[in-house]
Length: 180
Image (cartoon, rainbow, N blue to C red; front, top):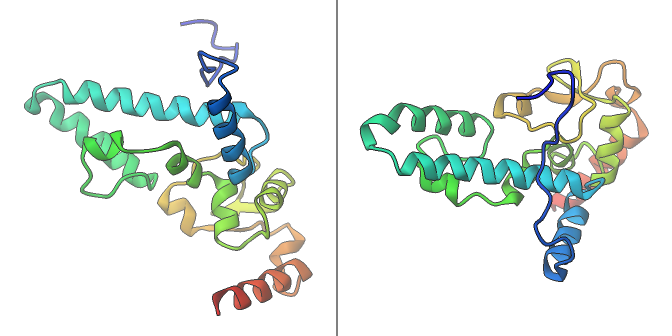
């Protein structure tokens, strides 16, 4: 189990570190989601492989004994926005790393138009300008639940909270021209 004071790795490194196709795919994902380094991508891949492994283990059990565990796992993943409400274990097996990356705080802020780029959204989070339900969030990799996504806004102590801030006006203009 290990010492509880010692932090443990939350990711697994690739088995073949210099595989050209994997390296190219990783660079595309890092650019597409504004990640700081490959460890953030590896963390999502490890989380995905853990979810898929648990789903495969549940599929091998009897339907009677897996029913409760399956419904609990589906409801948890539904609250995270990864599977539909009436999802099945096959929906979990079909998940891709992009699905997990779309639920990150950094990506959601950019997709909702609170920042003009993924890198700016990361900067807003790290500098404490973003709040979820009134609580400042400083982790760009935080996975948002559906309920948290509804309560996402600028922090009250942030200058961006004011509607007349130049960044908010610029984003509103960009959003208005992008919708047309």
